[in-house]
Every structure is written in C-alpha cells, then in structure tokens.
Length: 283
Image (cartoon, rainbow, N blue to C red; front, side, top):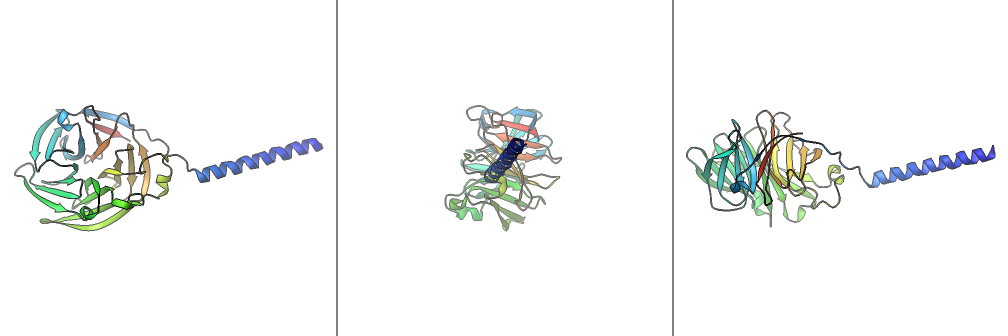
C-alpha cells in the first residue's frame, strides 16, 4: 500500500511539474499565429512593363489602375482582356509606390512622401504635387496609399519612419478640399502590440507596410508587408485584428492592394525576375 501511495505521489508531482513547465513556455513564447488559408480565385500574368508593379486601385468595370516603381505612368489594366488598355503620363521617372482614385482624380505616391495629384486623369490630366508631413522625416520610405472609408480623403502609410520604425509605423489621413490636402489625423501602428509578438523572431522589422486599403463593407483596414508576405487587418484606430500569412511562392513581393465595390480582394506582386502578377484572393 505504501508503495502504491508513493507511486501515486510521484505521478502527481510529475503532472504538476509538466503543467508548470508548459505554463512557463507558453507565457515566455506566445503561440504562433494560425495560418489562414487563402484561395486563389483568378490570377493574371502582367506584361514586362509591369514586372515591378508597385500599386493598384480599382476603377470598376473590371479595370485596375496600376503604377510601377520606376516610371511616372498610370497603366489601366483590363482584367477581362488581360491587357493594358491605356497609359497616362504624369511625371518623370521616380520611385512610385502607391495610387488612389477619387472620382475623376488620381493620386500617386512617391516614396519620399510626395503626392502627385492628377486631376481628370483619364480626360485632360493636370498635375500638381503636394509634400506630406512625412516628407520632412529623415530617410523616410513611404509606400502605402488608399482612399479613406468616406471617400473624401487619403490614407498614407510609412514603411519606415527614421529611427522610430521599430517602435511604431506612421499612418496619416489627409482630407481633400478644393485644390488642397489637409492632414486630419496621424496614427501610430504599435510594433509592440501582442499581435506582432506572435510572429517569428527572425522576421526583419516585424511589419513594414507596403500597401493599405479599406474594405468597402467591413470598413476594416488592410495593410500588406511585401518583405514578409503578411497581411494585417486592423480597425480604423489601427488596433490589429489578425495577421494572415500569404503564400510567398504565389506572392513573393506583394506591394499592391485593392478592393472592388463588393469587397473582392486583389493583390499585386512584383515578378522578382518573372512577370508581375495580379491575384484575386478569397481569405
């Protein structure tokens, strides 16, 4: 009987010890995010000129406005025809990383935080430039641009904002008024949020926004990370909801993000030596 009690005591002690170790490990090492599978609905191989496609905006009628990161040209890509149907020049060669469409006007973002406002871009293009407040940050790299939820302003997301990038990433909201843009909000995406703690430690810079878009139905914000092939979903206050790991073999460098009016998701990726692609995804 004594031997039985001793054996039971040892077994109970081992169970308690194992539980304590498990609790410690889980506390010290957060669970990895559950992989969210995405289904490829359709995909389009882009022509050579869009091998380095860097941004998308949905125009309606199965058309997307695209820019690439070397030329001051807006390319209209028709998904039905699988072809570029129109080219609109707006500036000299440069590092262009974002595009947004507000009615008849197009806005194109250069990586230094300068916006090109192309009025009546498909009829009689008139171009002016606007320096956002991000332009004043040393060594800034700005890549995300989207129309806001109300359609009366722009969201501009910094990929890197000088020495503070490891602490937070800046997203500003600009309101469109007449011939002017006015900064309305400045938000910080907190890099210490628990959502990022669950990512692999070897990821470089945790999360660096390369594109931003607003879901037309849920009003949630979607942000891409091109380097790590991640998709972050937040509310309008930049509170993370979930992070989705994208298939890196399918989307090796995803830099463009756009929604149709009904919420269909389009992502573009640079080709990395192969043709660039636009992919229609269902999460």
